[in-house]
Image 1 (cartoon, rainbow, N blue to C red):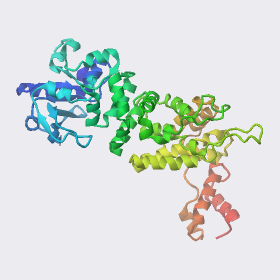
Image 2 (cartoon, one colour; image 1 turned 135 degrees about the vertical axis):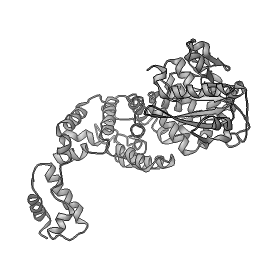
Image 3 (spheres, rainbow, N blue to C red; image 1 turned 30 degrees about the vertical axis):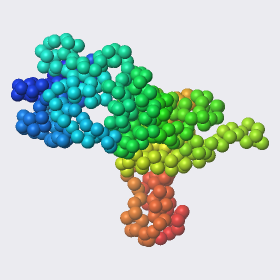
Length: 460
């Protein structure tokens, strides 16, 4: 899309122009400049300026001082039907980071070089003279590069600005951000940056659970999940942050069903099928669907010719392991429930062509069924390769439609009470029996349903 058709770009440009008209220096900063140079769409357009937070608050009618102590103000606007929120940050120099996340003190600056030098990676330390660019000057001529970011973009390198160990010590989340950018962009980690990352990998556990969860989710959903997991493993981060996943390495599987190799290899292949922008719950469901296998590995019994490796109960164990992991990373109840549902039901599709109609319909009306189907499809493609069960599920879903999957119930709890049945623990069993018969086409009226209940459970 043309730049000015993007309301977020247009809003940020207007902010830069306004600040410059008031006598302040102002540039586009960070990831949006990197993405413009790479020719990929940018989501956010951030502004860096010599204006103080008070200057910014006074310059615009609608603002939020989201981090004024650190020089960050959110400028709010609306272009057409789109609401915009542009982060405007004052040039600053940071003091010591005693908590491994935020500077103890900041000093505002009018020098963009001081501001760039406290950022994380060279490719994120670029500034753009947006008004000059918009007036028609070549993009490359409008970029202010004070840290060698353009050369690293050309070379495909993730390089920390300045001393890598210090950059990571300032904010431990940068250990994961290095992995995310390397995975998403297909870049290599510059040797000194890689060495510092490996040395400080154990310190990643100091990051808050919520920030870890969000950054790991970005690694999984930005389109290169497999490479992200491989880099987490190679740098030593995986064993500290997701030891449950690290334990999959070397856990053999029966070759007749899993010619791809061990559980970790299977999981890597599965992540190859995650598209950019995938739901985080689907991503975590794919990552964790076999997390119960290491604890349930059972080798072939030599006394039983033809016996194979088994993982008896791996779904149930996997649910327990995943529940602990999701709680540790502070997932919301709704997201955790969906990830657990993906784990709980992922093996059921193997029997889908043998299911009775009621069981099939109940499976296909699971919430977020498309995620279940996506997991099953990736699971098949990452092992035996047959999509027969997936194709059957997809065809059944299309043919049955909403009315057959969720018909109005012939029997309800109120109807049972009206028929004279006392409320009690058997109500649920009765209602499920009636609904099963309805889904299978064995009954068609409320009278049929009550007759079935009387025959199976006795009269009221």
